[in-house]
Length: 175
Image: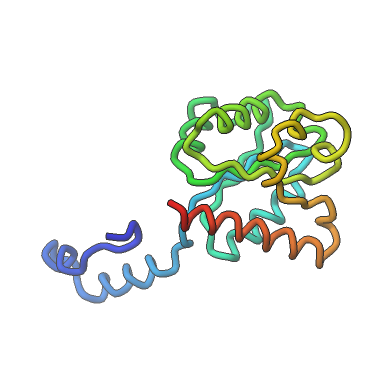
């Protein structure tokens, strides 16, 4: 049984009226498709994070956006861990500032050390590809990085987004 379907016989046996069952079926059909993703980013990457988030939602992917800042609105460590452990894919926006965030770095390292989530790094500036960054030494990770450095150019954004969506869906098909 799919996570998005409820057996009609069960619903009828509970006494739910037929019109409500039909409405429920219509509602469930409109829910975003699997897989479930977490988009993790730092405060300096909010604009591109919102763009990617909106684009993924428009493509009917379930995605949660997490700005890993510190402060009164910061997500707690237990809640963060639960989000990552219960989602299929972890998309991390990698930028100069986000890769200085200890929470983001710890999340990447934990995922690389055998988390159940599939890590997709998204490069939004030259930090990952330029200079001597430790991600450059993680060769398989670097090869899987989606390049969004030219995200403000419409055509380049679309190409990068298409690669990201393909990577998410390929991972979902493997599970």
